[in-house]
Image (cartoon, rainbow over all chains, first blue to last red):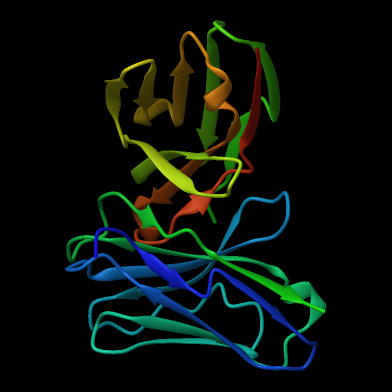
Length: 115
Length: 110
């Protein structure tokens, strides 16, 4: 596609439920990132996929968070047993090339509200 | 990890004024980007500028990598420039993972 596509754009869920957020990166981009932005805050790194390498999961806040990337393209971020503090905008970004340089391009985000 | 400090945290301008936003970072970097987050939350790429100077219309940016800072210049500001400006850097020692500053919130009044 023309840009990074994320779905759903908005998700309201009840505390304790599981949610899945999807990211479709720009075609051909090998690197994919998930960030989280709480209200009025900056962006917090969650996880990074680069090609076929093992993902960098160092930013995941707890074991309730996991992510996978299938076929080197689409990624799904899963949050199990959601808590109110998980409420945030979850942003996905992709980057072209196999190296670690170049621009990041962000999607419009998935706004998660946990009641 | 690398520290990123943006200043000022808040800036209020009258339409037509010029401004300079600063990003200081604590380590050598191989990636640096400036973003504008508009009121709808979309992150818009402004500049990819790990070093040197670039210009795009009323905006320009300069990164002095050896002194570990970057500047974003906005000239003849417009109300549509309002929003949050973020600097994001990746250190040479941990390339691939961008760390964002806390942003500068710009309000341009008509």
